Amino acid sequence: MSGRVGLRMALVMLVTISLQAGLLDSITISHVHPEIIWLVPAAAGLVAGPGVGAVSGFAAGLWIDCLLPTPFGLSALVGTIIGYLAGLLEQRGVVVGSGQVFWVGPGLGAAAGLMGVLLYGVLGWLMGSDGFASIDYLVLTLLEVVVAASLMMPMLWSVRWALGAEGGERRPRRRRAAW
Image (tube, rainbow, N blue to C red; front, side, top):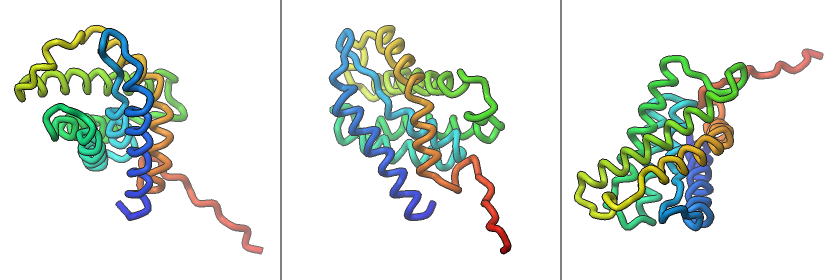
């Protein structure tokens, strides 16, 4: 990954974390709020494969871990797993974008959000955090699935922009007229 691509991915992560901390954390239903950070590694994995997805998930998870009172590294672990698994889908030939049924992208976003909620809850509980047992997971799951499904396509567009030619869809170069 070149320096320019790394900076653009860092910008995508920074905007996502800012939206999370500045807007989505204030939207609460039954004391829970949606998490959109899981969309970064899912989109990176779907665009560029398991390696880029896992690294993006680790980096985004570490950034968001700095803002959370939960065990440090938990978000990084969950993000790494989500990015890697999404990358495996990319290796299997799953392409999200033009030519696909309209619900494939939102469906994968909903799956990534659901996986993030469940992994985060189970791993947090296994790490001994008491707060994970008192969460209303039904409300959190429904909220996460709706928000993740609605924001997956903009996240995919952002990650494709950030990864540029190193991402999944490579655009052919235009040839200049020879005259």
